Length: 76
Image 1 (cartoon, helix red, strand yellow):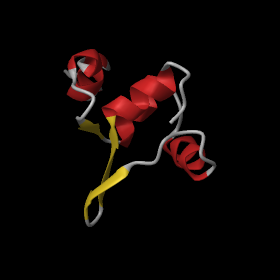
Image 2 (cartoon, rainbow, N blue to C red; image 1 turned 135 degrees about the vertical axis):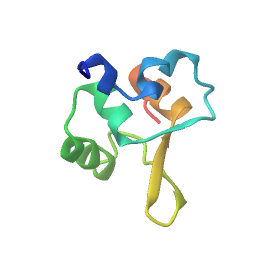
Image 3 (cartoon, rainbow, N blue to C red; image 1 turned 90 degrees about the vertical axis):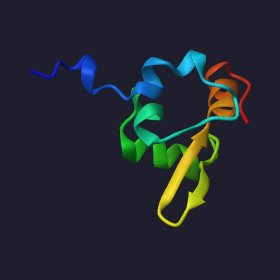
Image 4 (cartoon, rainbow, N blue to C red; image 1 turned 90 degrees about the horizontal axis):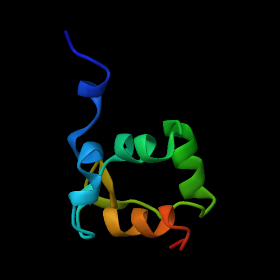
């Protein structure tokens, strides 16, 4: 049986070990902020949250260093 903890993305569990240059997807941002997917997108649109980078067609991800600065209150 899968527990709730097992459903966390590995990147979320090991976020502190990732280099600033690493990329994480939206579910990790949701886990870090407790925001819904829609709220993450609204915060990007209004400039509150740093925008993700387009890695390929249909794939965007957030830079870990940008998220760390945001979480530490330093903004972009």
